[in-house]
Image 1 (tube, rainbow, N blue to C red):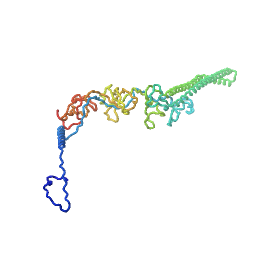
Image 2 (image 1 turned 90 degrees about the horizontal axis):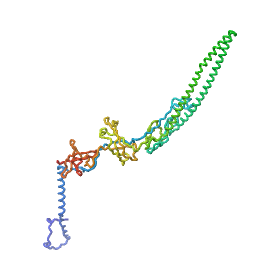
Image 3 (image 1 turned 30 degrees about the vertical axis):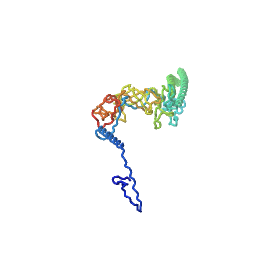
Image 4 (image 1 turned 90 degrees about the vertical axis):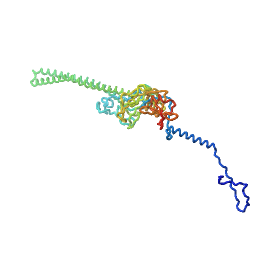
Length: 489
């Protein structure tokens, strides 16, 4: 316990009276008081300095902000650099130089008339089939029945393979066409044999008819001689001779009249067989051409790209075992040196574009790829979309890739920034630091005694950055939000 000297004075030893100790409890003298704690002068001095400094900072900030509360203002510093005004477009990578590989168009008579071979028995005789080929086999992979003109892919180049002109890239099943070819070869042999038989038959019938004419002539001559015996013959015999002579003459005249008709009938039959043979020969040549089309070769050097088809209700790339329709594209051979970006731009922005403008192209699949490009095509008419309003049109544009990467293939999505203009070594500020008043740009420039509204003259402007021609210098600090207090110039 600490005692205060004003309330409890210490007794002086020399004036204390002498007393005789009495029996009882001993009296314990009070403890000596602690010494008085002193305040260090240096502590007072430092505390005063802190208070004065804080007051000075408060007054300075209050002056800069108009006497209100302290507000933190986000700022930025003017830097020197390059600014590009660009238009961003999105699209798909494609090849300007490419070859479409189509399924072959198979030619031939679908009715199999005059096909020959074993088709005669199955069709109920020559010329009996008119409703389409009856040659049906099961499709590859357990599919439905296929006819002679079905196109089943047996072999197929892999997507991404690099091929040379003349390399085999696809092989269709030739079995049905080969069987068709064999049937028509057999049909030609049958037709040749039938024509020879018809010629021999015509010659035999001609000789037989000639013999009939000769016999009829002889019979008529004999009847004429019998008529001459009339004067010495009975009346009844005379009449019989005359009737016989008339009958024989009529028979002879009839056979002479049929002479040309018999020849015409034989010539028509032979001509019909010759026409059938010509038709079979034509189908034979068509089938030979079809067999040649079963093997597909690359028309140019390039990369194999597969087309997509609908298979069992699903959308996917063409693969071995699929059936394709004649004339259907199932593969592309693309020149990797001719890659372009097919994109679209808003019709308003399209007015700013010019052929030859440079672009920076980035691929969505590969973030590390950025290649330069050149604008080589601008569409003449806009296209509308069901996903946008009718008055919003899009102009197709084409950007050529000036540099290639082996990973760049068709059908990849990409974007391009087409450069409208550039400025170098310009004083740059973010567009958030640029304010406008009735179309006049200005900034809030930081000065030692507060913020100043500073008019500026802008140059080229991009979506995020603006070049400042005058009003701001490199290193100046400007606000990117409006200060609450601005000092007038």
